[in-house]
Every structure is written in C-alpha cells, then in structure tokens.
Image 1 (tube, one colour):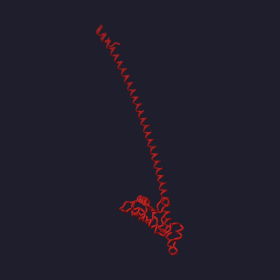
Image 2 (tube, helix red, strand yellow):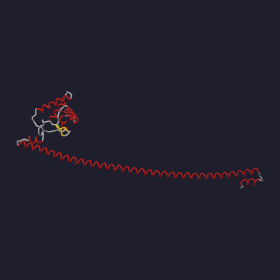
Image 3 (cartoon, rainbow, N blue to C red):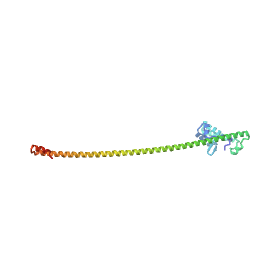
Length: 235
C-alpha cells in the first residue's frame, strides 16, 4: 500500500496526465500496465488508476528512456519501494486526514478557504454540466423533430409523386383506348367504303358484261340498219 502521498496532494485524470507528460491517453494506460507488471504501485479507485505528481514523473521517465520499457519500469518500481521504506508517513485514510489537520489557525483558515474555493469551482462546474446537458437535450429534441418533419415531408412527397404517376398512367391509358377506338372506327369505315366500292365495281362489271353480250348478238344477227343500231342499246 502506498504511503508516500501527501495530504491534499493533487490527483490527475488520465487525460490530464497525458497533457502533462506529452503523450497520448492510450499510451498512459499502456505505460501504467507496464509499470504495474514490474511491481510499481498506483493509488486506485476500483479498477481506475489515480495519478499523482510522482506517477507523472515515472511516466515521463518511461517516455524518455533509451532502454527497454520493462527494464526502466523495474528500476522505477525499485525506486518507489525504496522511497516507501524510508517514508515515516502512515497510509492515507479519513482518520489520518483529520489527525493531520494543521493546528495553526492561519493554516487552517487557508485550508478552509482552499476547500471553499474548490467547492465553489465544483458547484460552478456542476451548473455548467447541467446547462450543457439541458442544451444537449434541447438540441437532441430539435434534431428528433427535424428528423420527424423531414421524414413526413419525404413521405408526403413520395405519396404525391405516386399519385401523379398513377394519374398520368390513367390518362395515358384513357388516351390510348380513345385512339384505339378511333382507329377501329376508321378501319370499319374504310371497310364499308371498300365494300361499297366493290359492289359498285361489280354492278359496273355486270352492266358492261351484259352490254358486251347484247353487242355480240346484234353483230351476229343484223336485220336492217336501224334495227341493228337500236338493238345494241336495248335492254
């Protein structure tokens, strides 16, 4: 158990450590695993590592080493164990915190002022988080409404387009049927005209044929001149 952490010593998140050490957040996790694998101890809250300034210095040492990372991690773990052996501090606990409160009223006043300032900052941050969450909820609600409106517009547009297509298809069908009926009527009319023409031609042919026969008979059996001529036109 670590006992080298001073009361009220500042702790850092992985993101803050990455910024302090000038490395990426995944690298912070990687270096932490290498250090622990070689015996280095971190203060933890559950499975989450809590970093202090000495931990950041250890990570920087890993960052800048020219040796294999495991070798450097072993050296850092050994140095930490030696430092812990030479420390007369007790483990950090709530009871120790109360025991280590400064007795000097001025120091106590400074401590209370610091705590009040931190509490105010925390409250301000909480208010900001609440405001951000409210704004985010409003934005999400507006996006949902926009999505609903867009979906409705697309659906209405699709329905209107489908209705137009169906209406145009119906109009085309009616137009086609009308043209087909007109062509049918024209065809029937032409057939009747053709039939009438055939009948007229037939009558004309029969009349001409009858005339030819009477002409032949008149030529074959002539009587007197005028009788022969008039017989040609008799029926």
